[in-house]
Image (cartoon, rainbow, N blue to C red):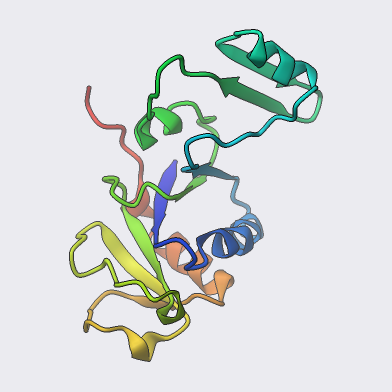
Length: 176
């Protein structure tokens, strides 16, 4: 399995890029999964639904499954933040690519998503795990770089670059 992180400040366009990159990788015959870092108290369930009611009753885990999908919701009694590696271990091993949104401080190889309009600094000068930059304004990059600079608005080109550099994204879980 290949794993690539997308590092960026909020408002830089990570989600939009990933929603366009997923079909570009699928068009190349690849199976794609996503790991997303969420804010503290997000909901994937709806009040009143059976699964929500089970969680409210105190269930540690609730799995809802049908012929078309499976969802696992786990409640933490005390705040706990699983690492990106903990989350990757939960995924199907038959996936080709895992796109990781968030976890910008992780040890994963990454593509930085940068837009000058977001008003945030670049990360690539200080993060050796950033292997490329996806931007809509290459001439505005504030620090010269030898890294590949990819067009943020061309997900097919980003998919091609990822595929061309596939071995660089081989996932090896950290030793425990």
